[in-house]
Image (cartoon, rainbow, N blue to C red):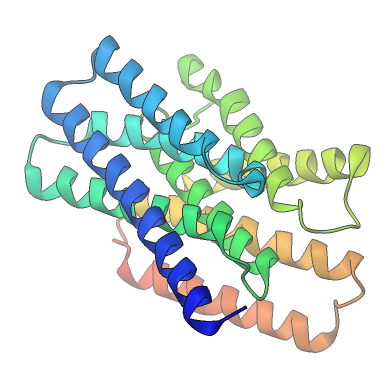
Length: 252
C-alpha cells in the first residue's frame, strides 16, 4: 500500500477516535451541568452505545471495560463537588481514556495483550473509585455488605476480559481463574481499610496489585515465569508500594 495512502488512513482513524473521545467528554460535561436526570442519562447512553456499535468488530475485546468506564464515570461525576475545576478535569481525563480505548480498537499495537491489560487496569481503578464513594466494606455495616457482590462480579468480568488475548485461558478455566482473582480482590479491599491509604490511593493500589497478579498468572501458563520476570514484578510492586505509602497520610 502506498505510504501516503496509509498515512492518510491512519490520520483519519486518529481523528475519528479523538472526535469520539471528545464527544463523550462533552456528554459528561453536559450531564454534570444539567444534572443526572433520566432523559439526559438516556440520551448519553444511546449516543455512547451508538458510538461503540459503529466501531469495528475488535470492539468486542473491550466491551466490559467500556461499559464499566461509562458507569463509573456517572457515579464519580455525580458524587463530585460542583467546582468546575474538579469535575471538568475528571471529564477531560475520561475523554482521553475513551480516546485511548477507541485507538486500541482501530490500531494494531505490537503487544495488544499489554495494551489491553493497561485499559483493564484503568477500568478497575475507575470501578474501585466509584464503589468506594458508597461503601467501605465493613462487617459492622450491613448495608455495605450489599456492595460485596457488586465488587466481586465487577472484578470477575473485568479480569475475565483481561485474559481474552491468552490462548491458555478459555471456557471454565478462565471463569475459575477470574473468580479466584476476584475473591482475592475482595480480601484485599477489606485489608486495605486498615492501611493509611486514601480513597484514590487505595483504588489505584488495588488495581495495580490485581494487574501484577494477572501478569504472573499469564506468565506461568505461557511458560515465561522465570526468576527475571519474578524479580521485575517484585521490583514494580515494591516501588509502587513505597510510592503510595509515601504520599499517604499516616494517621493510624
